[in-house]
Length: 228
Image 1 (cartoon, rainbow, N blue to C red):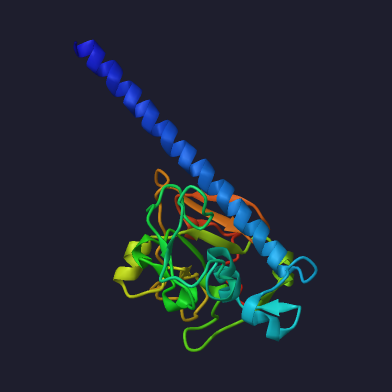
Image 2: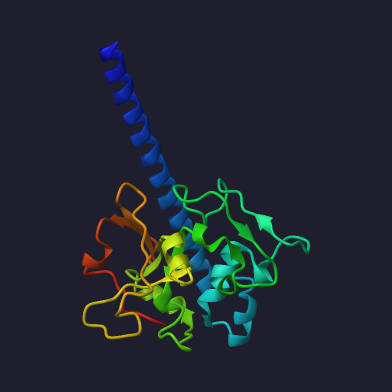
């Protein structure tokens, strides 16, 4: 019996490791897709609409509108008028497979206006410096020229519960960068998640996806870039 118990323990451990590896691969695949959609959104010849950013012309846009397009909220709402709609966690690229599986969207709001609830269940966040180069007001614009700097982090794992508990918007995070004395230097907008067996997963503007245990130790990652 003791031998059988040991074998069962080994089997369960192997199954758990296999499941975690599968979730990580799915997350990486989804972030690849988000990065691809960013490149499409950046290209004036492939994008059909950028929502409110259309008023800016064809060369620049707000990150808010790209995020709203992924969540299908605000101008990108694709359902009849209803109070809210639940996302299917098996189909949504904006829900990490290893994160919470209950998330809802509300119409006539942006992600910044709590269109996505509960905020504690948000599992993926964008580079806040591409949204705001400061805190108030700091709103910036981005363009396809960002693709010239492929090592800019774009989207990554976020601890939505920790961000929400601190009163921060979980859709955008930014780390303190050594030598960069900006509004994010205190680290109050940095809530990374290491839910993939201690690994942080991030997709870059250039399309590649990397994992690490220490995202702030990566000297080639361009956290310092704001709008472009």
